[in-house]
Image (tube, rainbow over the protein chains, first blue to last red):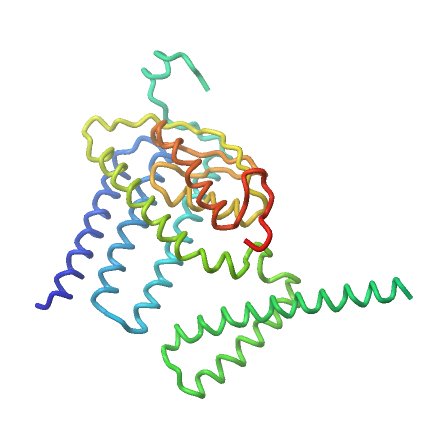
Length: 110
Length: 184
């Protein structure tokens, strides 16, 4: 096991850890809008860490450039997708979850 | 004869502009081709050049405008630095949201806030709302004109929006009053 493999493995583990966190968040969040946050988190840091790990493993080669492109397209599609889900939920007038006690205490509705 | 020279001059200027835009598109296409084929062999390059030229020529004449006028060489030069800064913001926000998720009390107080941006044009606004969505804790749910509806997980996430906006303004060379800086 070389140092390169160890570093690549560490990055992949970090990515997997963030995927687990994202899934946990997806299950814990109360409504559709809040659930968008952990899912974008999964895509951004989780997938990007795995890609960084693979980039370290591949070293200076053409695959590195391809991986960078994969990361770019992944980020673009993830952001667009999250926005589309949120927008369609908003247009269907799905109410978003609010913390009840906070709103009653401060009294600033809307 | 004055109007004739004016029309001709405009025509030539427009053609030169379209040609330059086509050239930029061609360069981007062929760079993408080289990365995908992963070789610099002559026949590969020749095929790529033919395809890129055909796509560049066809796209400009079909769509009229293939590249947004906001994309200039200066913007492309600043893009890698912008992405590094954005990734740093994303990592910071990610750790913050991770702390919220792992907290047993789930300390969230979500709300949809309205944000009026001073960025002009579709592309800067799209980049801005995409950056907001990529940063965990904030998701752009609606973009209409210069008004963004942003869903924030916690009230303090809203404070990061102005910083992101400044970053996007820097990328496109936009000043605070909405004017695009010339030659920036």
